[in-house]
Amino acid sequence: MRGLISQIIMAASLAGTASAAPWVREDDGWYARALVAQDTLGDAVGWRADVYGEYGLTEDWTLTAKSESVTYPDYEIFDRDAYRLTLRRKLLEVGHWTLGAEAGPVYGSTSTGFTVCDGFGFETRAGLGYSSAYTGRPYYVFADAAYLHQDGGCERTRVEIGYGSDISPRFFVTQQVWLEDGRATADSVKLENQIGVHLGALDVSLGYREEIGGQFDEHAVLVALVVRR
Image 1 (tube, rainbow, N blue to C red):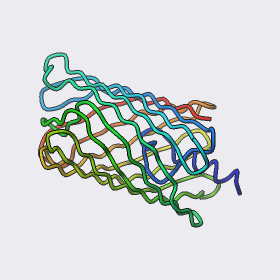
Image 2 (cartoon, helix red, strand yellow; image 1 turned 45 degrees about the horizontal axis):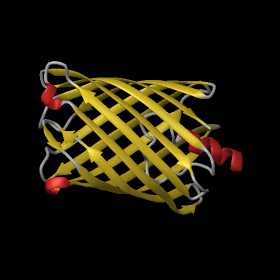
Image 3 (cartoon, one colour; image 1 turned 90 degrees about the horizontal axis):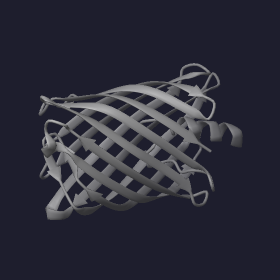
Image 4 (cartoon, rainbow, N blue to C red; image 1 turned 180 degrees about the horizontal axis):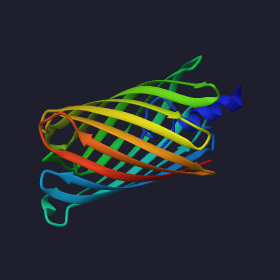
């Protein structure tokens, strides 16, 4: 049973869903993701790169860190860098259900659409997830609720809902939607789909993310690499 749960947790850590609040790493286990995307925001074409990591401090506590940089060569006003460090706690585990929460500081420029929040702040989130296996293939679903506050009274709330599954011993798919509401930033609804391949300890995935909320035009093509222990 422990082996099956470990496989399910690994599936729940596929590229694009690593920051889901319900699940933690095993003690001394780690996860690392590197992502590169070509973003298009209105008429501006830019590049996004981020690195994200998790480390299991205990069976119930996980440390997470993320660094993100976005650059638009012809629209430097949209360039930004952001950093986040959080502690994640598994609160409850009943059967295939897991409840978790995390919180920590953020720094830099974060944005939604054409509006930007800057400076220091903090992010908190809670999440509920379900993970199991169907015909021997792991799958998961989760829902997170997050709150972000930065200098100058910039506040945002976000709901993230995601799904992922192995569709064969080698290939997997993930889908995620973000619904965001901000006091100083635009409302946003984003949808992302990824398909990837397991290559031993390395996962490689290709994805497409699109703003479907209608307040601004944004979409991206992305490639993600994931390794874990």
